[in-house]
Image (cartoon, rainbow, N blue to C red; front, side, top):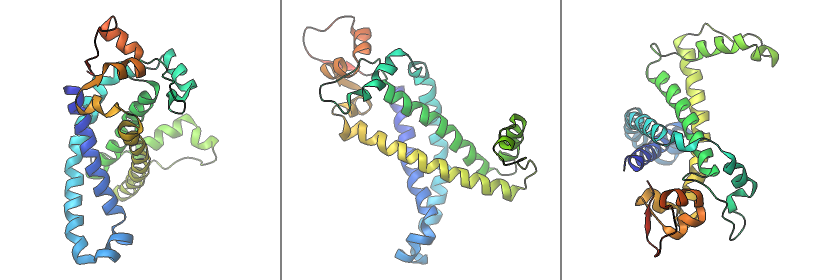
Length: 237
């Protein structure tokens, strides 16, 4: 139950954040010419309020998902076998063995954790620019590695004003957001219409025994110990 709560809390808040963020980004170039300033103004104000406040639900969901699933998303040898055949997504009847999370799901998990943490950090920096500047310190750390100099960028600036911090945070926030949305769109497709039965796990908390045996054979064996005598539903948690 906690797993699905964390997943849907993060998923639902992400959708709100994505829609309100897109509304603010493309308001001037797309929505104002289409609807006019008088219509767009209250939409933008409500969207900004929702974006700022729903972000806390997203961060709570991110923490819950990370804590509950991180131990089951450590890469292992089975993941290499899964990746070698593309998870069977492109070959009919091919179902490489996997535990509760296959390699594809692990890639999505770690993408969400890394991008979620990054976008949360830049979002907090935008909310509290004077208290949580992030780029000056980040640039100082990068300068210490010698990487910017090796790439020909020289010393990155380590003295930045609040407006400069906000400009960089806003740029980074947008870049990570678009990458995040692309990954989540692919995740939604595969988890709904792209793979039959996949939605049941997060929708109802249960999956069909035959589906579990085919797609997550190692997890099925661990959960049951032996094949059941009659088909039933196997809890996904």
